Amino acid sequence: HIHWFTPQMAPLYYTILKLNSMGTRKPVVLTCHNIEPHESNPLDHLMTVKTFELADHFVVHAAQNRERLIKDYGKKPENVHVVHHGTFGYFTRWSKESKKELKKFFHFNDKDIILLFFGYIRKYKGLHHLLNALPKVVEKNPNVKVLVGGELWLGKDYIDDIIKRNGMEKHVRVYPRYVQDYDVHKFFDVADIFVLPYNNSEQTISGPLLVGMAFGKPIIVSPVGGVGEFIKAKHNGILTPCGDEDALANNINMLIKDKKLQKRLGDNAKKANDEFQWGTVAKQYLQIYKKAAGMRK
Image (cartoon, rainbow, N blue to C red; front, side):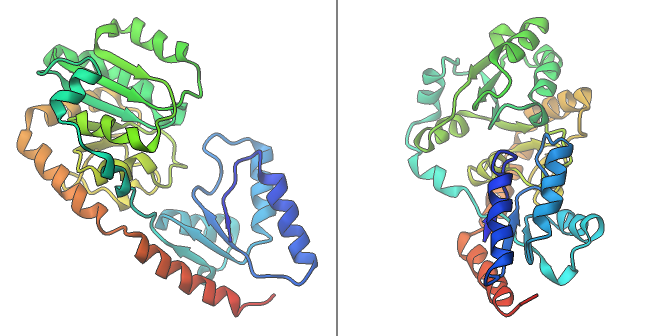
């Protein structure tokens, strides 16, 4: 069982699977968190195709990826399985501070409305869309602040330039570092609304999205990839058009104004998250292992 690899690891995994195919030939199960890397190049695609040729069963986290493996990569339908990613609810175990204490920790005022962006900061995550939409949000809600937490892949100048260009220096707090497990709750517990303006169709599902659901946050997210299989419009989240910064600003302003909708979305997000327990995931994987164990080429 191999979890899908980064481009740097592809040659190693390919070598292992190639050697396996030349030996006693153990069946191979491959989990594809994404079909291909988020920011891929022709070499990545070639390594993906070659590695897929050496796997027997595939696990994906969204139905759209199953269809893609069958249609674009020629995989047999009976060998491609959808297993939704498990919950990240364990991050909530460290919650202990009050919202007032956390606002003081992050240097916010008591009346500030906090929008959270959380996760690796890469272009496909769409942080620039949120920062560009922010002036229209602040125009109607002057006490809005954006809290950004996550490891920078693009350099801090990338964010600073957008913030300065929009004149939003007083409205953004950036913590450009990997956030340890025991600190994750601080970002989510202080937040009022969680915003994920993704812009890449390879976004099968989002780890931060599942974290936000576990914390019962009202969520605004782009319906890329398999997101629509987890988030239902105005039931457990708001779906905002990918890359449409005007629509993003309007959705944020609408949700800020509607406190009842915030609560309903948060409550339903928490309930939906409870469906993705790891015990269920484990049972599904066990059935796939049993099927693969009886298979030989």
